[in-house]
Image 1 (tube, rainbow, N blue to C red):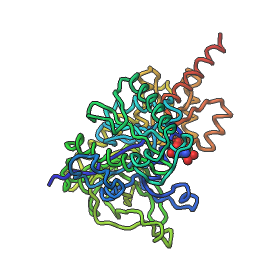
Image 2 (image 1 turned 30 degrees about the vertical axis):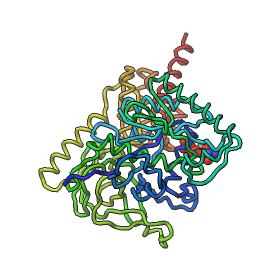
Image 3 (image 1 turned 45 degrees about the vertical axis):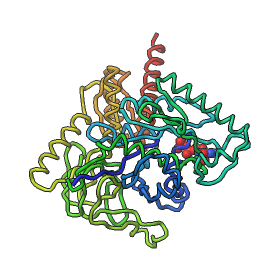
Length: 457
Ligand code: GDP
């Protein structure tokens, strides 16, 4: 039976422009507060049932002409570029749609432009949230109010100021080849990019944002979202995590089919495909129901796409974040899944030659993105691997350094440097470059190479 699944949505934009605040607002919770209490309950994605969208939107739902048949929306909890570089599905982005957030007072910033480039490259449809409208002088704030209601309460001067800022944004988008407009003036969403003024902090405009995401997804992504619900599940690993009383678990977004408690799954591991049988499918309990930290999750029998789920199973210690999860219900399916996953790992976890840089990244997807960039720039790679930077990595870089100093380095994307690795690197003079923006990381490395060459002259 075919069914329309929830669209998977990512939020991206420049640092501090409000991605986390918006996701929190949508979650109706405060991640920071929770983490202070030692409990992080999100498992990669937040579901917003369509009833919630309708309730929030109220009469605004009319903005969307026609009935909304989607079951809801699924927001990826990881804000930023990572959602695109790390989280992939069948070679494309895991996200079906994106929200690009821009601080309306700051306008375009480097990561705004980078985000747009990434969205373009992935051909991901998106809408723009022009955030922090409450910062406009004299702005009257009301929690969770639709923008179209809120705007009527503002005096002429404040309205005018917002209008000016929006036109500045529209101009910037125009320079990048987009025909953008304020959402309520958009005639045709296939040709115009909708800008929704919001305040993530107070929830203003969030009703419109949710309605438009739902409407656009249904109208333009219906074919992609139509899936065989009963089919074996496919997903992407967001995180590999130790959990009290459960051992190593994986947080996964399921984007196709249905995952059942008794399914066998195949996932990507270091140099191999891991075949294991699910021990439990887990969803976080509401916070106020958690009495004992060992019982933070509810077990479920099955979960249908699209959804976030935690999987407990034996043998997941070596599982790789970013790798596919494929459910297999027969020997034949297991073999096919193994071949597919092995193919993917081998194309990413590479060792190209003796002399080259050492590359480490947090997920298979980010490793692939970083390696590709390096290869495009003709920077040779000795080893590309998922995980934190270890002493072994530094020792390998050191052996390269003797042959070709400029390649005797370690580049790490979104990973930590182990203590002993940092010590050895310092003692032996092996440079380590880390960061969470790919182009910036490569830029830093290139700047260092240049400076070294200058020194020699
Ligand atoms: P991120 O780096 O894009 O995830 O940005 P954050 O969500 O962490 O927001 C950065 C800062 O801007 C925080 O101090 C937020 O409280 C603040 N902020 C975010 N959205 C709004 C908004 O709508 N209005 C106001 N006044 N502040 C906001």
